[in-house]
Length: 505
Image 1: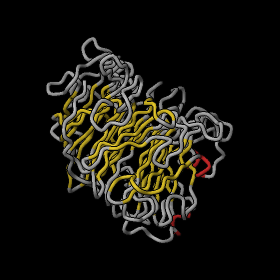
Image 2: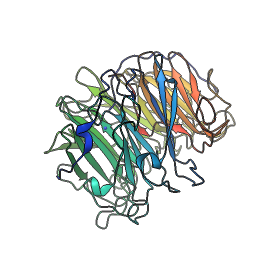
Image 3: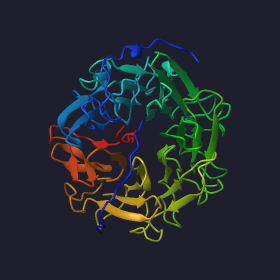
């Protein structure tokens, strides 16, 4: 059933993401002082990023590609050129199976105020190690992405770890713009990392960039001092990442959330956990907390297969509301397996996330009914600056059409605001089985509009599979392969690779 209400959006906040090694960042060239944090070319208009990590490139299946949609006239990704990025764009040969673009993050990494782009390449073979993974960093400039500084490719060897088969570095990425300290941070998850006898326990790797050209690579795991928890088989720590400043305190540094959806909590296998690391780029000593559904103040109970922490969103600043949303898409509601749930934390601080609000499709005021494999919470996104958050329900059935998907929007009191699906007015294309509308989400606030990007990677389009829908308070629209200057050949075209938020400076 179609459920559509008006979308009233408000607020604004930017996104952002040892041994010292040489870096070219001290010679960044002309600055983009007029640019917002998602403006790659410094023209004062916000740009968007969409990805198709399953795309075939030059006949090579699953090589992956990323698209930059330059904006104009106060609308996100409207009116400007389209740029296609592949592994070749970061100086690598294109290989089948790399899945370039599995994760993306936008931040001002190199201090010139142009937006920069971090891209995960988790299935890249490195030095003969299959699926070791890597990340690419492409720098913005007054001539656009990749227009001045050469791109950089980072493997675990450059990020405090060791290159090994199956680590899948770049499965998730996050990045934080400098906060007056002339230090930015880039983080990559490697959930397939084995440590000792612990298989797929997972790690994260960080790089701190400074305008003096230093890079400090560090690897963290659940066995790192000050990080709670223990490395165990199948934790998949680092599967999801997001960061925002001042979530736990007012230190002025970025706090990082790390999802471990495979974490066992007591006897509950795969119940999931989230680690919150305070001041990830503020230097040692770190402080961190672990959060599960058994933590005081968190609604629900840790149960096998919940996958708490599979999706994450966070937003915060000293002068604005702080919010965290955690998805548990595997949560069983009563006897309904895989129905999914979300936990929302309003204004965390004082060293904890505080008391959360639990939401499911059986919650009073939330349309729909919890059904098997709805996966409510498959994705989550916050509107930058607070005000609203969105929840993807990628497995939602609409009538007899299976797994077409939907999105539910809530305000900052966790009250339901609106519902969207492929039967909503303004939605592009037809309802289709397996569209998975809502499997990827991002919030945006730009000069002329605000709203959410919604990925439907299984929806058929004119140029292949996948459509990105723009839910806007100005003009709903869509982006799809084979239209609007984007090349055809979509395979799983979608938005929002894990940690993409778009806002003004």
